[in-house]
Image (spheres, rainbow, N blue to C red):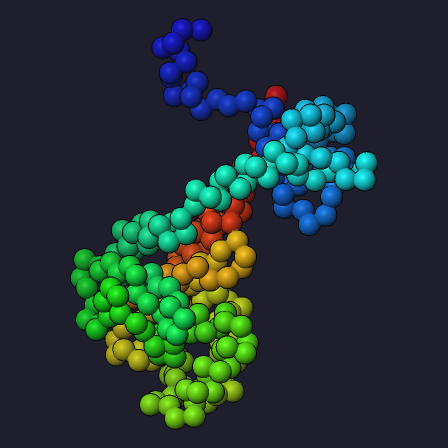
Length: 275
């Protein structure tokens, strides 16, 4: 085969089917909470045990998988080395920045990234839409834990004792009561609201604090399940529906989930087989 033939688009799209099967085996073991037997793997991968066994021999020999107690298979030391090397090269904040830049381009909405500074959310990235919304929020500003979407998301994920301390202190002498969907929330209702925010990994305001401006946010998590940052999107009420299930709310949640998967290494590999 000539060099020119090898450079054709069709040739470049071709892969090594046996390698892809080996990687599917590693993915399946990585996603399992317990060791898997040859039959378990055979059923999940839809490969015959005799064919699968050949791959297992090679993967055990190279240290990418190991047998536990002589029966079930787990990931081996070579897989651990690869994983640690990959994680060491990931910058969670830069990943969030890249994601919101793409979100800003695809949605043409104002977007931001916030981190928790120990007391409140801090805006570390702010990108305006082609028609900026008139809000007094900019890069480097500290936001309210109670009157901002990102603040509520961070509050919802704090350890219970720390969260309750902040809430109790606020409700002892509130400057105003938090609102959601047009309703004022007392302390018990606010705590229940935070539980829903945590469950949905989504918080949205539609005209609750900023007239004619809607906001929606979702959390990016690290490999330990803690919040790394929050991505938010805002726009005018007339053309930015952020209610649960809306296009923009799902777009923001998908964006945050994509970065979480990049940080944590979770992904779905296309299922392919070797001929």
